[in-house]
Amino acid sequence: MESFSLQLCNDGIVTGLRTPALAHRPPKDTPLIVGFHGGSYCAEYYDATKIHSALPYSGSLRVPFVSVNGPGYKSSTALPESIPENSSFFQEEGKYLHDEILPAIWQAYSTEYGVSSVVILAHSLSVPMSIVAASFNATLTSSTANKPQENKVGKEIKEKEEPEPRRQQQQPEIDEDRQPNNEGEKQTESGKRNIETYPLAGIVLSGFGIVPNADIMARVHPFVDPKAGHVTFPLAFKNEIMLLPPSSSFTGSEIYEQTERLNTTVSLAELSDAYGPWPSYWKERYAKHVKCPVMYALAEKDCFWMPNSEAMTDFAGAFEASVRVETGVVGGGVHCLKLCRAGRGWYARVFGWAIECGVAHGLGRF
Image (cartoon, rainbow, N blue to C red):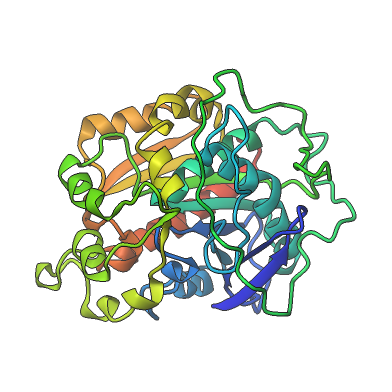
């Protein structure tokens, strides 16, 4: 996969990896899959090795793929230092994804790739922001969809950008009255109007749930310094819980050789919202508004969330307005689904399901 850097409407940048332009235009209603990594990883999560990568599936199925460095990861611009009053980290991150990142990617690559919609692939701590963004997208009106406007957004940046420092986020009270609006075109904090709206055809969510694994959280706690803005997990500890030890045979030996390259810090604000305010507001305020199809899965050996049937059903039931919701437990999988031996099967399911979503969107099913 090749690197990219795009200008955003708020003068920030988003970076990551993308598959090369297709040699032939894809079939009608092909989607663009946009992948978001979990906490303490980066865009290379979706291009770890030749086998554990979105690239071969993209080429064989002619479905382009963009892997994004989340806000504050690598050279992608971080969120503002302070969170607005009555908001939270994931709410602001979801707004940023909806207002800035996805429109810029759509503007830059939809024509080049010949795609007709977007399918979000979110893992672990990128799941909440993706749900928030999908909720806002569901309220867009047809009168404003797909109308491009003159803007520098989505223009590729050739020069190497210096990373924006990732800052500690504070977690103020949640605004219980805030709901996704239905005014169509969105405004950024600077007052600049968004460019072309991205047509969302589906979201794929994995590695995030409802019932946390208390034993693992007790082991994570010693590495968390409340006074620090970020958390650095020892690589050996990360590998043990997220991939399982090599002796378990769930993850191939070649992956452990790549984990240092894939490793980053994780924002304390992400962890704080995930195990703090998020459970109290995500269903009523965001999930219930999502209309596009949703596929949700947890790994059999997920370290952070309990993949029991009751929890899976509870999570899926939150998407009451969605036209299609599928759930399942990935047998033989670990938390980092794309990196384990079962990851190839998960990639195949994701790409196949995304194609179905693209066709359904083209047929006007939602």
